[in-house]
Length: 436
Image 1: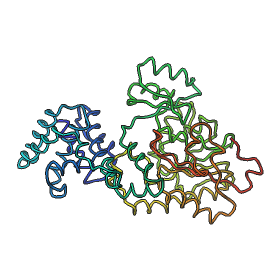
Image 2: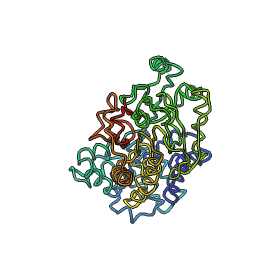
Image 3: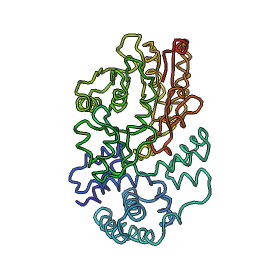
Image 4: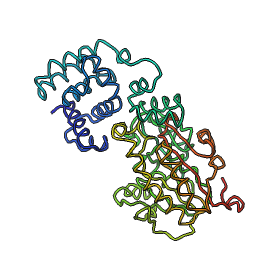
């Protein structure tokens, strides 16, 4: 079985049984070139709506009228033609050959459509104009999602967010500053010929332009940690010297690592012992000590009152991470977004019930009902707390993404999208308890 057929199988399964695309790739046995398969799978998922619009124009038929196996083949072939370095004739030949094995009666149809695709750039098939529908197709985002972002951020920023989601996703690298300096780490990457740039949001981070394969030893030996720079930026918004910090939904552990590197005494809490294991291993490698880990339900956190600070990185719709997880956009619905808010509110309520001096509520969602609405609803039942202006805690360019006291980091920053809202006791400022 060829890697293209395995790619076809993965795409078909993802349509039938929603799961993370990378997990589906990892579970597919026998792949010879995983980078190639990953490029094709994520490419089809990232550009699906745009591909479908172009296929309809070339086929003269609606996508809904084409059998699903044939649609998968056409998307796979067109993705290679328009979004990879695969030669057009090879993309046509290999896909038509695959059609001959999987859907013999559609072989001629697949051949005809793909040959037409080699004759035209996809941009010539895109709709013109700046309407939500046109932007939706060109950026391959559901119209309803762009409409929401336009209402929240304005049409221009909504389009910029969608365009940023279409860029290739690379990992970021957090330097273990307890083991070596950021400058020494940069020199090491340069010596290895690794292309990177320094993060504008977090001084101890690098943005890689490739996978972590060539820095795997640095991660393995605890000299660096792979995570998104937006996550590290969130961790930077907790006050310095605030003592014990509870990371209430810590898995897979990046924010706990970043908090520890910033000098906080971190207790990492999560409901899943399996998902927290990477943190346990990373903590031992980076700091030479066991992580302080507690397993439990974040809505009923098993801690005493009077903690110094709590980070609530709540489970969410993850609309800020569509560059990394392009398949998520095709599964989200407004109803699923609304359904997240009950869990989010329960976790924030539990966090404030611990009576911390400071709480940072964060999600990798851009949606107001998962952020502002949750915080305002919970604060209505906790009279001793109020929103806290995060601009007073932010240092450097991260402050540019704070609007009216709230962090609204969107993907055109180059990082994953995050929203973060600070919450403090109403008398904390008078006591000088929260300082940068």
